[in-house]
Length: 326
Image (tube, rainbow, N blue to C red):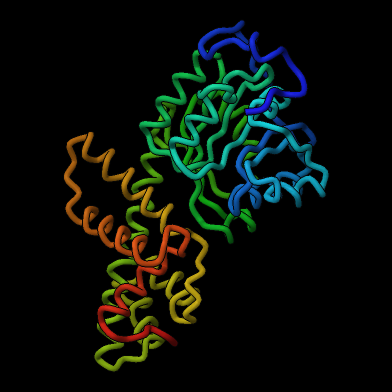
């Protein structure tokens, strides 16, 4: 990572776990400067909402094009996550994998070495194991970690209707994170223990994928038998079989044949793998979860990790020899 434009030379940076104690300030209000690392489709939409709310932003992404729109709107572009953490007291993350979250926060040249940061808000789905590692590394530098994984997709990120599962120190949540996160959607504080919010998010994403898998099989059966898929969905959605896939994903992305809901197969596969790994570590069998993981593995192998996870339905279509279109 690049050396920050402000601060001490690289060879004088303190290691994580060292450094003087820091005083935590009061609430972060609109008009103040916050940092944002990771400006993919979700991150850029949430960062845009902060600009709309009047916050100043210092931003970084490995892909310069991802920051262009925000910079054009007045955000300051940083050369590295470390520069963001040496500029802003509160830094938000929206990153794709646990390994990247760990590297950006507590790795060599990570956010933990910043000389301004006091609170890190992780909007990623990184899992409870990674959360505990990151929390320990940041706490040793007197930096609070707030886990805040989100659910609701790109539409929710743009519209401010996400569900945010939150865990971490209550004081840091109430004084620093809550005023910022309220601009993204509905907040659910789960407790102070590191990783609690991540566990809630993994359970949710497992259920979302499972609903898509079983709904795809049922819809393929109905179409193969001669049912109009639109009528079948209408029946299901006023009956006991309704779920998030039949109510949202099928009408929006499967019946039109666009398969563009906005969540990548690779990310869904990662989340389900994380969920099953955590469950196994806790001694909890997940028989049906293992089937969902296999279906996602097949979908990723056939259509690629960048395909939309509604491509799960394409597998059922191929196996049944039908198309679920309306």
